[in-house]
Length: 388
Length: 127
Image 1 (tube, rainbow over the protein chains, first blue to last red):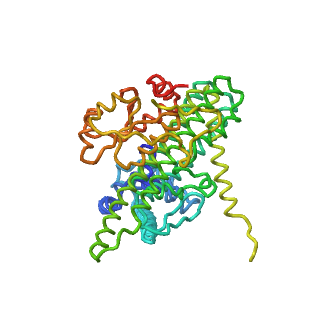
Image 2 (cartoon, chains in turn blue, purple):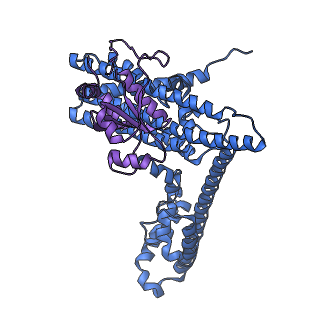
Image 3 (cartoon, rainbow over the protein chains, first blue to last red):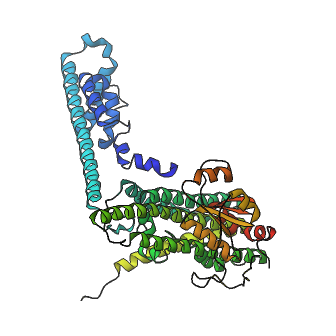
């Protein structure tokens, strides 16, 4: 999953922000031990890295203490003296002793400040590490409790049975990102249509939107292999969306019904083609539904208590039935996949029938529709209830 | 002879209860022979529910497909005969003696509107 693998590998982007040089804690320790020895030499580089939180720029001075001095003694005219002394660095032996002493004191000061900054930075790293560990713990805890976290809309959908799958947890995160990207693409479509951009630009946007849907079907397929009931239940979707659930998603013929009035004016050939597509979709949907019903029937029959026999017979029967039933359940994955395949075919056929502008508008209508359903779900969840 | 169910413009999809066509003709024997002898053949595993969906789709279009059921032992052999490789994604469909494909292909061809012309050409449908 090109889109989401990066996110999964680094779900806590702030680690990168804190470690601009991408250092792990192990290497931090190694580097700091090196630094203790070479404190003065390395202070420029160190200053560069640690100065961000403190916004003191040491890296541009020849003497590490210059910046600090500015901080502490803004009224002091020492900088000038220092500049003078740094210029005459080569004539060390000819310098008056107070200046030497002064410089040494300032070096000590700089070193001290450097050590303090380093300490602060390490503390920041440690806090982040603790935070990371806590988040991981929380994730594990929710896993063990058997609940699925629904990241989107803050709704907590806790599964009643079965342990939480790490693949399902991953799917939830991926889907949340998918929705965010969907929202962004819908906005882009809206502004592109309003701005009346060129066909080429619109083309690219339409292609992106189409492949975005394909990404959804791809991650759904992976999740379905892991837990098909989860996908079929639509628990990963909001409540209003679930109302329209068919075969783990939306019914293509229903979506086509919504789209057509929004796409007017259509050429006669286009209207005929879209109507034909809708009819074909209905037929295909019904065929799949009937196959699904047959699966339910055979599953029920498989689980029904068999003929009564001795205790061995009952146990053997039971085990056999369970094994049989498990085998049948595998077929459910195929049905979910066929549902998604049908959605994909509907999208691709529409893309062929419509002009690029109509396709863009169509995708906008769809994206908007899904957004409104999600918004409706939130409103429904937040509605004021009668005090009982 | 196959009896065509007349199609109307409104949704006249046969409900599971009311299907008036005769039960699907089940064949056994050499799969290649069956495919050649019958205009529409569905080759699928025994008791497969996806096969059932494929059959329902074809029946809804007015076709009464011939069903060739494959047991688990015969699977690989039949698959090899049918599409050259040892594993086929059953169920698969043959129209007019020619291999159409698995359910993915069938659905794609149906959604693009090409399925009915293909069926008519094979003599499985006429209106």
